[in-house]
Length: 253
Image 1 (cartoon, helix red, strand yellow):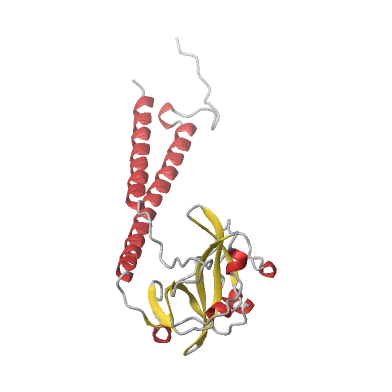
Image 2 (cartoon, one colour; image 1 turned 45 degrees about the vertical axis):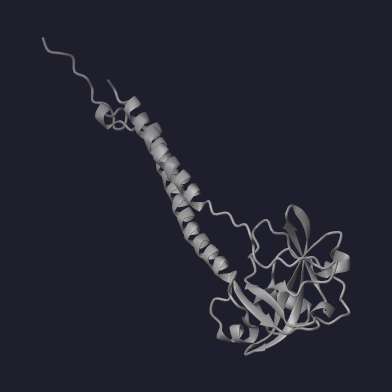
């Protein structure tokens, strides 16, 4: 007696068990791969930050004993001007108009007072000078032009301005309230032509009583980038372990 004939299944109605498409497994594998790449990328980025931070700390350490060089010579030579100590004559610095750059120091909000000093160094004819930090309460008095000329040249450290981020408020120029170090806009407001691309962060001479507090070099810079890198790489390894354990758990007996 012949067996009943089973009609062929239409195309796409059923696949052999060995060739079945497991959509959840594919999605979870793709998500795991994306997460792994992100974690590894973050770890590599922290290693790059570690190298940058070590170079920065080395420059700051060398700066502690570095002599001041004439500012005109430094600017004319060009190159990397960040964290270079320089000296320039600017006797009327305290008499010049001042801008207020919002800042926070030791948990207190205030301003860094920025003015301009004329220089003669090739294509550069002025430089912005950061006179230091003052609290909100002292800002009005500290920002008033002084009467006495400085007793000698000023010494400071050249610094690049930090670039604004997406959370940095826009500068309110009409109110003399600045949130980012925009060299060109600041120089234009102060009537200074051809400014240097860096700031001179004042070290000395000490300001008179009630004046701003010079803070040219950060004294406490954390360096935990290696710790962060190990954390990201560890999370990537843990993700791989969880994914492998999930695969073994789903294997049929």
